[in-house]
Image 1: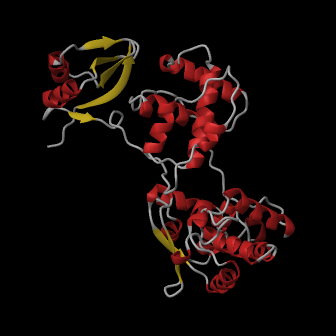
Image 2: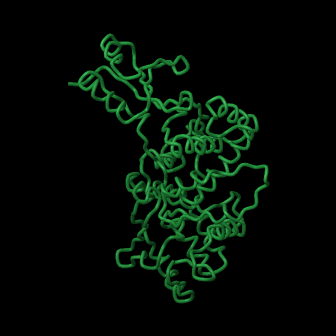
Image 3: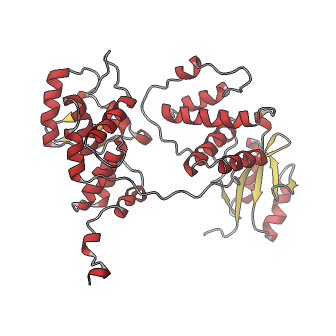
Length: 376
C-alpha cells in the first residue's frame, strides 16, 4: 500500500553540531509519533524539528515511522554526479605554485576527497581556483563557520561583477563540495539559489567548412587529430587517451575507454581516416598512445586546441573553432543525414537523451521542409 504521509530528511548544522532535520506537512499521526524521538527539538531558523545526527537516531526515525510514513532521504544520503575520468590524479601544479603569504590556500582535505572521488584534473583546477577565491573573500573568518548568508554575499558579488552563469554555478559547486562532501554534510546548503541555466546553442560548422579545416592542417599528425575529433565525435580528453590498439580496422570502430562517467563505448571509424592513420603510424610510430608528445608521453591538451584553432584561422573560418565544435558538428551532421537520435546519443556517450536533443535545435534538415511564409 502506498504511503501518503511523507517526511523529508535534511542536513542541519546547529551550534556547529550536525543534526537531522525532519520536514513534513502537519499531520496528527506524525505530530504524535515524532515526540518519541530522543532529544527532539524545534528550530525557528529552519522551521522544522530536528535531532542530533547519529546512526542510532537515524535508525530510530526509520523504525518509528515504518509503515506509517515514507522517509524521503533524497536530500540526506550523499550521491555524486561527478564526471570521473580514468586519468592519473596530478596536483603538482598546486604544490609548486607560489602564493602570497597573506592568501589562504585550499585545505589538504579538499584535495584528498577530490582524489578519492577521482575527479578529472581540469575539474580539480577549477574547483580549487573557485574555492580559494571564496575563502579569501572571507579572509578574516574561519571557513568552517561560514554560513548561507556568507555564501549569498559572495554569490551576489560575483553577479554584480558580471560573471557568467556557468562560472557562478561552478563557484557554488566548489563551495558545496567542501561543506557537503569534505565535511560530510550532504545538501547542507540546499537553499542556496542558482542562476538560471543558459540555453546556448552549440556552434556547428558546415561539412564544407570541416573539409577546409582538415585540409588546412600542417602535417599528417595534425590532420589525423582534427579528422578523428570530427569523424568520431570525440572529446579532446578521449582523443588524447586513445591507444593504437583502440583503432579496430576490421570492425571499423574506435574503442573509447574510461570517458566521462568512467564509461566505455564504441564510435565510428572513417575509411578515409584509416588511410591517413596508416600513413601517420608509419611516419611517427607511436607506442603507448596513438598521439604522443616529444618524449613518448600523452600528447598535450593545449597543443590539440592550438592545432584546431590555427587550422580554423588558416582556413578562413569566421567562427572560433575548438575541438568541441568538431564534436558538435559530427552530431549535427549525423542528425541531418537521418541518423536516429538514440544512435547519436550512444556514439557521443551521453547519459541522457536530453543532452543529445540540443542538436535538434541546430539541425537544418527539418527547417528545409518548412515553407517560409514570405515565400508562400
